[in-house]
Amino acid sequence: LSEKLGGILDRLTGRGSLSEADVDAAMREVRRALLEADVSLDVVRSFTERVREQAVGATVVKSVTPGQMVVKIVHDELIATLGSDGQTIDLNAVPPVAIMMVGLQGSGKTTTTAKLARRLTQRDKRKVLMASLDVYRPAAMEQLAVLGRDLDIQTLPIVEGQKPAQIARRALEAGKLGGYDVVLLDTAGRTTLDEEMMSEAAEIKSTANPHEVLLVADSLTGQDAVNLARAFDERVGLTGIVLTRVDGDGRGGAALSMRAVTGKPIKLIGTGEKTDALEDFHPNRIAGRILGMGDVVSLVEKAAANIDAEKAARVAEKMRKGQFDLSDMRDQLLQMANMGGISGLMGMMPGIAKMKNQIANAGIDDKIIKRQVAVIDSMTRQERKHPDVLKASRKKRIASGAGVKVEDVNKLLKMHRNMADMMKAMGSGKRGPMAGIAQA
Ligand code: GDP
Ligand code: MG
Image (cartoon, rainbow, N blue to C red; front, side, top):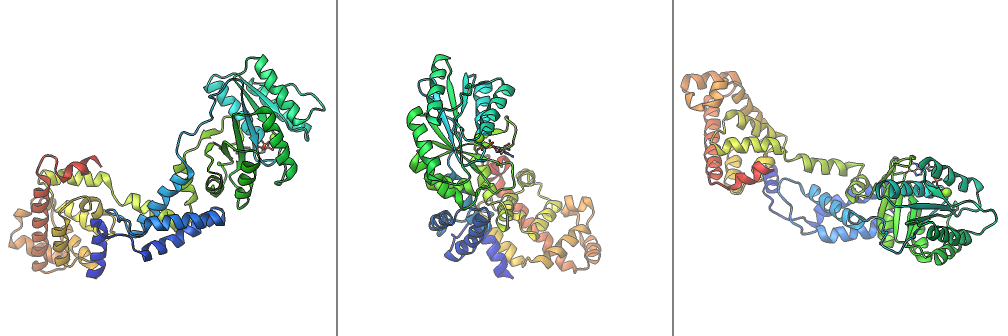
């Protein structure tokens, strides 16, 4: 029992560091979550290895358990691996700036071309020309033309019988002559990675010399994501990745795989079929999602919920004023019972060691806490606010109401006095330990 409490309090006070056993246990969950999210095996392996090295020996911060601490480290590393915010399309070149879309058939290239054209036109006030280089499917060219008409954005007139590279050249000439800022090149994809698609993409690239080459990839892509991204990067050279169907049920593991393998930033995400469903990429959102299912999430949530900041601030204010009464103590006891709460308050305070002894001496466990709460429940409101009024007869009444001995009532009152005194002492001083709590 006291071992359990000691364990809890060590966690609360932020002492100790992550042991190999802590890390291994948590990493098993993490590994499972990543695999469930469809992160490729190789990436899972190297990622977990890297995190493991970082995590072992790391200090466990206040108010979280070792498992939660590992999850936090994993989460941070996921974000770091996924890349920083604010990686946008680079238009810093002599216009017309060519942007080329590559990717498998059905990944969302044509839709993304229209989405990006819309954003560049409406938000960034650029003059944009779109061109479909998909000569295999006449419907594909028409698809882009329809999107262009809807958005009132120019598309390159369709000329039968031209090769993709020829169309690219024509698009750039039209872009120059027409005073366009940006020319978007929507290429043809295939259902699988093949040499023809690659050599065609490489030829278009050398003809158009695009400033950006964006791999458009379905976020639901699983283990193939790595091969896809690697192949395109090696043959064509990517400048960024656009992740589509982020509105779907997928967990976004492909994002981590592709990013880890190519090192290329994820610049945009598609979140729907409509042309306004294009957003900037925020690694923290995808990181949360990749860790998304299973036990790991609840661990993260628990870590976040551990500190009930509002309540802590309120009680801290009372403490500062020396008004920590028995109702507040009741709250603290209950929070202690479900283990989140005491950390919110006490975990933030230095000088915890003294209180730790106090609590340990009182032998607090769930049963005792319940009894103590019952004692407080048997008091009137006034008694809780001003325990000084509690003389022998009142104590007897309270004890029988709570089904305990008068001695137990006395113990509780003594504990309250000690806690209140100590808190008052810690709370005096203008920017003492409380200052931080009030801001939390
Ligand atoms: P392409 O073959 O690479 O040009 O792919 P398309 O642009 O034609 O897109 C294929 C299908 O995916 C179409 O039905 C699109 O509406 C749909 N699509 C594209 N991007 C998204 C997205 O971000 N979310 C959703 N839900 N659907 C998308
Ligand atoms: Mg298309």
